[in-house]
Length: 263
Image (cartoon, rainbow, N blue to C red; front, side, top):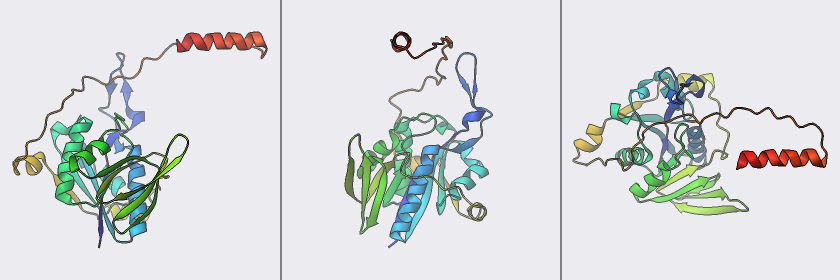
């Protein structure tokens, strides 16, 4: 039996293209969309699970606005291992918060069908680290976060590990499940030319809020919080304090300066 795997993929602005305005606000109008780096780990983990079970179909699921129409970004996602992609698009989905994203993904996941959903540790823009946990709660399935290794996959169960502060925790989870993987679970492979060319032939489906919610008579929830603004942190001026020597007096002076900074 073919395992159905969904992997969450979010498009975020390329960091080097973001312009920080004088007031600290961010101008992303010229930023190229790219896969959130944390989602690269989730995609690679999905490919690893497919290798363990043999028969599996991976669907990349992404929620957002018309940015998802970017053919280069779609090809980049599909070249990394997914067999297909589903994009849930709407102009109102430009700045979705985690609870809204999780709701849309949960509704889409029910429509697609799944045994396993893999998410990254967070997103490259907000890094709220909530979507995976919220998604699992909405779907009412087993949910794990911070997974640092997938040990085995067999007979409808996964054995995974989580690296804690002083120990490694081994857990067995029965499918269906939602798992959020840590950034150190793997090193995402760089797609070769053959994979990139093949990506252009893989199917990409689209969904709309109307099809997911309105036509089925499902009421879409409203956000309980509102995103007011996103700003870059204020930069402190360098004091350029130079301490020469390694004696006790110089060490005490260094400690004194560090205390002033921390307080």
